[in-house]
Length: 153
Image (cartoon, rainbow, N blue to C red; front, side):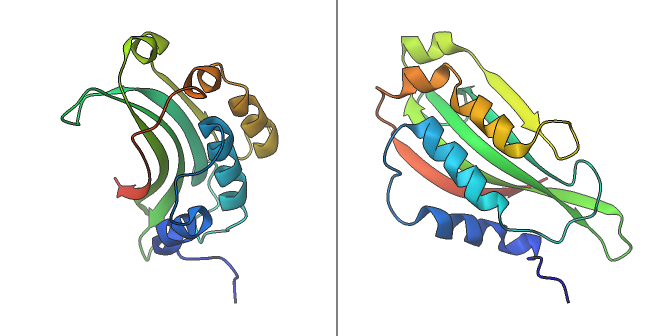
């Protein structure tokens, strides 16, 4: 029997890593630490190159009532049907939300994927993400909220 977890459990595992409080310290370091800890959970996904990966992203979003800037780390897991055919992806998101101001608006948008087999070990990629210049800007900003949530596409 496999020790791998079901993809449907992913958001509960992620929430258990975070707890009930806003993470302390610089947000970018908190995100990379959550990703390191979350990576220890193995999920029952197919063996394909893009079946389990991470996305680091930030930028202005327009689907909230107020202008909002988000900083997030996403783990994407592939879901397959009983025949092993691709069905969908589950994205578990660790996300800081900030009121958009001029500095954050000029920071622009950024997204960067990591997948196993891409040549860069996860720890090295997370180290690179933790040195992103957006971390310096957000270190002095107060997040409006921090959420762990799941989406399926």
